[in-house]
Amino acid sequence: MPVYMTLGDSPCGQFDIRADLQKNAAELRIPIEALDTSAISFTFPDSMYQIILDDAGHIIRGGRTNTPIVYTFAELAYVLNKYENYLSEHYVEAQVWDRDMLRGFVDRQGKQPGMPENAR
Image (cartoon, rainbow, N blue to C red; front, top):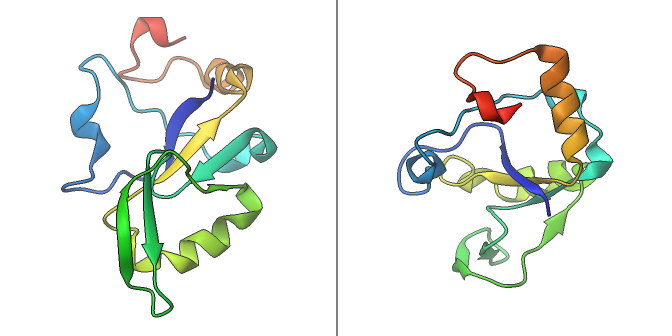
């Protein structure tokens, strides 16, 4: 089971996921260069929502899905370009498949300010 994260900042407004986080959650910022990107998959805007664009780049359908489109790190430039008009409203979800890689980053950085004790 992956660890679900976002790539970059969460947008403000209707699709701001921070409003749904638990009260004891913490934000951890990890530079993408510090991770093995082959252990990460990406969906836009997230793994349970899908946006379908017409040839002109306008939304023709959006909503919940059971069949997300999954991208690799190498495909992100394409995704960010294709959905550039919607990045301020939605986020790119990252699914990190290697928990030890995340633990290693936290251990190298030390305990981050505001991180719950049980997060290490």
